[in-house]
Amino acid sequence: MRRREFIALIGGVAVIGPRNAEAQPKKVWRVGQVLAGTRETHGFLALALEERLSELGDKENVVVIDRFARPEPSAVQEEIAAVSAQVDVLVVYSTIGGVAAKRVAPPIPVVFVSVGAPVEIGLVQTLSRPGGNMTGVTFEAASETYQRRLQLLKELVPGLTRVAVLRAHGDANAAFATNALEKGAPQLGVSLLSFDITPTSDLDRVFAEIVAQAAQGLVVVAGALTFALRKRIAELALAHRLPSCGGFKETVEAGELIGLGPDLIQLCRQGAALVDKIIHGSKPADLPVEQPTRYVIWINLKTASALGITVPPALLAGADEVIE
Image (cartoon, rainbow, N blue to C red; front, side):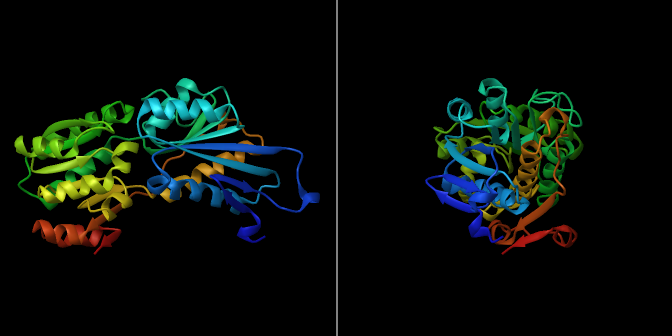
């Protein structure tokens, strides 16, 4: 069946399923997905999940309701509380989305996408046996990835000794990420300077303070807010000549120097497969939390050139994708 027979996007609602009335099942599943950002910054993620549900060819009709919220905990909680009363399955994105769903969503099945350390922040009991009404796909569940990001930055800037850590205030993943970085920093001879931001923060002032404290590089903690602000963060890092490292292809495309992380589109597709299993009778408690199938290294050579950085040949050869 063609894709156009499966998906109709009208006013933020996607209807997924066959149009043949005789093939209509008795159950119409309503799936709500809440994203901490705007349709411009996060809409491609919502679409990726909807497209994968279409590809899976469920016999039941599925109505997907997209909702977007400011990338801060209170706004995400408010949107989740509003939409979760209308749906059979809830999909939430990012760590603040997962935490908000844990707090305010009714006991319906919840699938989270791109959440850091779901066991440590209390969303599930274990990765293999979530044990409640939540399961999903983690952005990362091990501290080594943040240590590797710091190492990549050090390889690009061998004399690096002071690194700013930019993180979102109130994001449960921030503490996990900072602890992970602090474990790896001494081995690399690096000291860390943490800076918290909110949606109303004056980023120009934050970066002026980063420079005033003699930071030589920047690690951006992955999260809904920093992702939504990725273009401005990358612009300011470049303007202040700060080599930067993040966790997504999209942040490197926006201008960060280097990134290490999973493919967000693939995480959404994995999340859709979990929704499909729930529709077919599986319980979130019995569906293991999935991890990324692979981690990718991206390098922005245009940013490297603007910063006067020569990427070591070994690092360049090991990159999965080079952005020019």
